[in-house]
Image 1 (cartoon, one colour):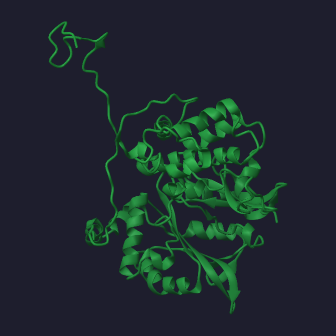
Image 2 (image 1 turned 90 degrees about the vertical axis):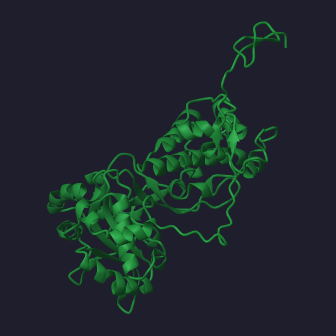
Image 3 (image 1 turned 90 degrees about the horizontal axis):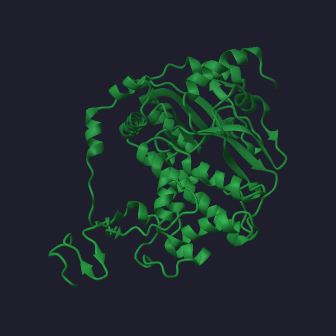
Length: 427
């Protein structure tokens, strides 16, 4: 199937309307065989892989018309997109993974959407039972800040006397901001390249032009309209935080430290620099990458070096993105530059970046504790922070003790600049 002339007439408007400044695009990859790590652990056969640059007509043609595309080791084509656009929200999508969720949505959420003048396009999926699909994506176009859109839909769900858990927290743009979802009408490579239809006026439609035109025709709330629909009573409700002290058992201890200022072998992103200049294990790994080819050689310890340094880059991006509310890829690009400079062989089979998006969504889960760093690399002997901190990430949130010079001591002679000093008093 090839794109029609009509497709080229609507694709430009669709890119402008749907994508805007979408910073995070991916294509599905389905590997023809199950690759394994050097230790024998199986790597995921299906994944999303980041696309360099923004959306183009070519990528959308691949998505709508040419998938699956054979790339020797894997198939690709369908586009995955995350809601975390640089210019604010452009869609919300309820990912309904069961008939129960579909029925709950249509009984309690859909009537409220109509009251709020919110429109949607239904994409079907899953299996067919009794002539009905068992899964759906409910695509909702809108505009507004990410925080305002999230608050509005939390309000709607609250008014329906439900929680996001009733939809397994699978609401893109509300509970999921950085995760990716396959763009509608793109074949699902992990489900035998099935192309699921959208529903228009009660009919199933698989023609991209018809679907795009319908999506473009849907009225959508502006940023101002989204904000106006958020009720003051709900804002106040969200601001009230009640802590049950009987259940709140988390204990935190203040960590203060003097920066070790360990030298680094090359320039690193800010948060990685803070960690690597204090954690001797990570610091040593970086030097081993530069001086001993530790991401170029074959073997478990060299594979683990690439894996966990990549995760360090993703951890940096996740923390910076959450703090700035703007997605960054500095850590990912830093790791790719290391591969380009210090690994002449193709790193593809290692799939070091296969968990990039999961790390962006849950960075602390993937950042190893001090004990695990030592178990894998045995480089923590003599560390002054051993048994004091649980993870090298402590150097990010810990309070650094700044050394302040108060005087000079030369050959045992205290100067007059010293506290209580009175000239040439011998110490």
